[in-house]
Image (cartoon, rainbow, N blue to C red):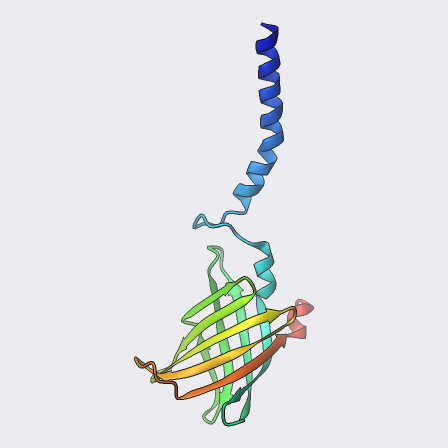
Length: 154
């Protein structure tokens, strides 16, 4: 009887010790059942900078990145080109292990972006292809920094 009571007590103590770890793991699951990485939220916010075409033309660029409650990344990009200021929603946006991959669809073109976060800076490259084609008609590089307004919470 004493041995049974001791085993039951030990089982209860181990269960109580493991319960917080289980609750913490459950809290880190997103709505779609995938683990959420709290560090990824550091990528959310406004990033401002410029891009340079392969012809050497420099123009303004900014990204607004946000992660929804399901753990999916969304955002917008604003850029200036020969037609003035443009705004587009990312059609796809992935941020994994400090790397960003994204696509933007325009009426007659698709823009593919790839970049690497480096603290409060991010840089990468882009390509532009006609819609439905793999031919590249423009390419270049870009650099952005976290907006100071985003840092201060404004």
